[in-house]
Length: 382
Image (cartoon, rainbow, N blue to C red; front, top):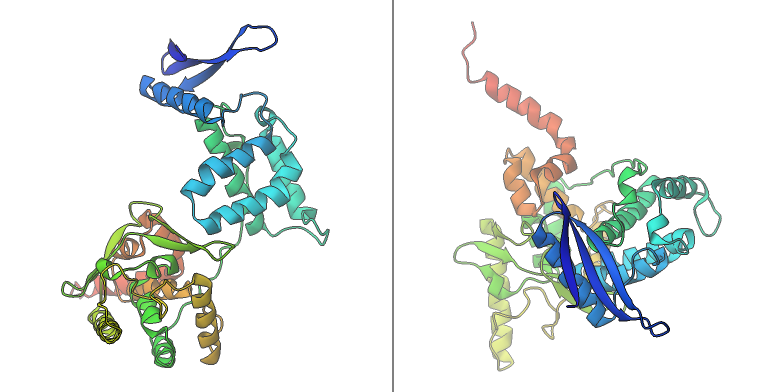
């Protein structure tokens, strides 16, 4: 038997895994791992351990250094599960900051006080070039990366609890959200008609979709008769400019959106133009082709789209508006029009309505004033 499970107490199990025999002494080597939860949790953990042993990725608890663990976390968890851009960000934080600070420590010896001191030092004089401390938001990104990594270490049974749970990361000032007014949207889109990106920019503002969702959209996802589209995948650009497709991060991210009549009209014209071009070249427009693409039908590069957006907003005097602010513009205008935040959450694909409310809290005072006025109109006062 390569491994077995023993019940220790209420909600606690021990896993014993056979690691073969010591070449020098010939004695059996075993690894004991504690699991809190149900027997099903213990069985799942046992299966993970056996898989790691078979694939040569097993790491013995108590001897693994932070550097060794973070390298494996990047390889076995981050790269397969997160977007290339997120993975590259985590890799940079790990290589430039976390490994120099904690890399030689044994993972099980990493304590909350070590992490808290690290945050303090980074805020004071944390830059490698010695030019001063990092800003609180940057240090919070370090916290997010480290906390996520240690949370997986807990699940893998390498540590008993996450030491980052007991640490207070620095509070960061909420970023100001920039949005366009109705008039600015009209000015921007009129100027966009002179570019190859008019339909893309139009849909960005009129749906609130993320750049990664827009560029991964295929004609098979669009139902012009019903006036809706489905978001089933995202596209990401890696450092080498290669493109990676993934499913949305959450179930809320995979969603259907109702299109405005004007959006249906814009997409209908685009599809007709593309169909005519296909016929002239002796082919037909396929459902699996991308809605927004190059002449060769290959998807647009995200960075290319962002650069085109930046040139256009500068041209019309709105250089403070980023591409992502099209999403904020969509949400803000809907909320100001009295659309329920729950509907806005569903359109944006936020995991919870709390995220939507927190992100657009700056609109709340105006909404509350309008609601108070509306309530007052329900009554005839003497």
